[in-house]
Length: 246
Image (cartoon, rainbow, N blue to C red):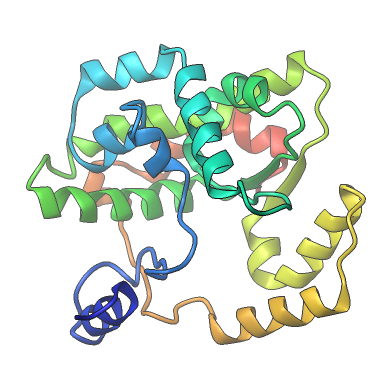
């Protein structure tokens, strides 16, 4: 019987899946979205699997504290024999940053930023690849979801920062892709952590063996979603100015 890793390797060799868009090892880390989905409060159910306006509106304003409480409980179960800190990731946490900080008041936030045109195009291509698998919706129906949901991702952290005393580390996508080790070293310094030579060596080895485009290039076109570059720049103008995105 094949284990998960062997099945994934065979599927990749056969050209199946969307590895060129978003790659995760079968036995490696994944995003928090799957834990949030267990509480049925996750953009995964709407954006990735279907087009549901009523659910999207509900999710934007729902109390996410129960979902984060479930998230925390699962992490505690997984870590009950171990010590150390978690490194977690989910873009949709930005939509409910208040609930996240209420659940994890000692969290060290790292916020990543990218040219909105690239972000919308890349995200649209990924989400559409999921919807095609479930035969749910068309690229045109994805347009409103992309602009409205990702705008919430962009602007809610700004509103939170303006009303709270925050020390968050901002990472620009182009800086990260140009010199990831330098960005990580700056991150460690910002939060007063030690980047040991061994940790840096392992990071360099990982970066060398996982170059961008390792599984192929992800190409996308805003026109597939009925959008133009001007449409996107208008929605994200304040965001781009706030973070100095060229």
